Image (cartoon, rainbow, N blue to C red; front, top):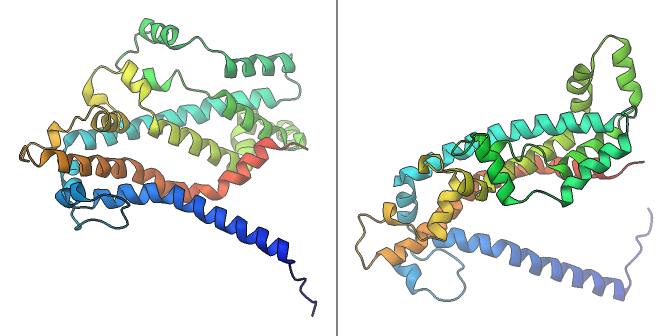
Length: 295
């Protein structure tokens, strides 16, 4: 049996210091989430009287969640957000994979120029007003296409996926072409299945981006029934629009319950992403490393 090498006293002090720092960082990261959760589960009157650190719900109550569920715009916002997330992510993955595949081909004419031209768009853009004029001129205002099409490709994500494709042996593509496959078949049946980790990362990036997006909807959408969940959440938090959820509440109780409703809305808007992320996390590091390191 091999003797275990004991750490020296300075190494033990260093390890203990690192553990302490990481523990403090964990508390700083997790506590705001717990505060929002505990506040949403608290009785409005008790929470209004509470001062200082919140370590548990103040007189457990689901009144805030009942008010959120009774608001028809929350359910409609969920549906609109799902449409945007599913449709937008599908468009993003399609366009990004096609662009990355073309840029990763070793026989692409003017490959260096094409890659530099694509990278140029990472640092320079037309700005908000020209983008709005283009969307308006195409007749896309007040439609989901105004949100989905302008951001169809993220240059950074395409570069990551392109680098991942370049790590695959070119012999796989050559063998498929000899057997009669075309370029699209090579991409769909060979390249993408072998690049599952980086595809999962793109799915995570694009999906979370669409879920959290509200600015494009605020600029391009005019009909309130089309608002995504995050824009409704913004109205509640920033504009303090709680009238639809405090109709049956007395004037003196509106402010206390309004605070807990805000926290409950945050939980409702964040929970789906928190539930989905752990299932994709195992692909995250692997996909990023595959797309960033090239031998």
